[in-house]
Amino acid sequence: MTTHPRIFSTFARGLATAVLALAATGLVAGCSQKARPKLDLAASKVTTIGVNAYLWRATLETLSFMPLVQTDSNGGVVVTDWYANPRNPGERMKLTVSILDQDLRADALRLAASRQVSQGGNWVDAPVQAATVQKLEDIILTKARDLRRQTLVKG
Image (tube, rainbow, N blue to C red; front, side):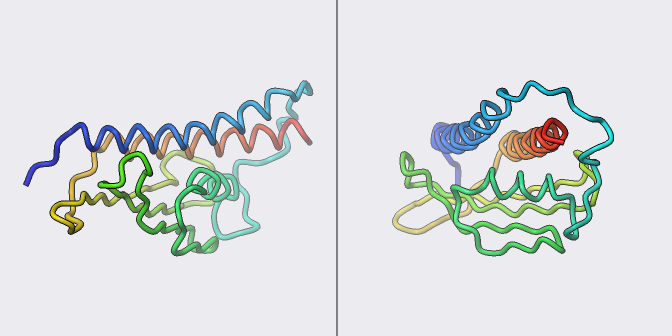
């Protein structure tokens, strides 16, 4: 069973566009700050919840357009329900994000994606390109760093 690459790329572009639009909104809002950051504030290790608060918040904000099935801030797990881009309803994705550490580090974030395509009225599992998972991880990490930077500026 093969999947036409254009179907996946259309979905991936739509998903990436939605995520990037959300991230850009946060970046524009942060540009109006003119104060210099104080380096002793907003530590990269935040322990008021079980995992890094910046990664947690960035994950929730980045995936806010998808329906959430499970969120566990102590365990650092976010599971989405199936999401189909309205421009490509014949394809859907489901994500599981795990935050593995209390530090704001790239290796503290893991994202797993499942993808299905509609064939003959049934949903059939299809491969997810590694680049899609990597792009989503990068977007979440960038958002987390931006949130931390905003905290530094406000402090």
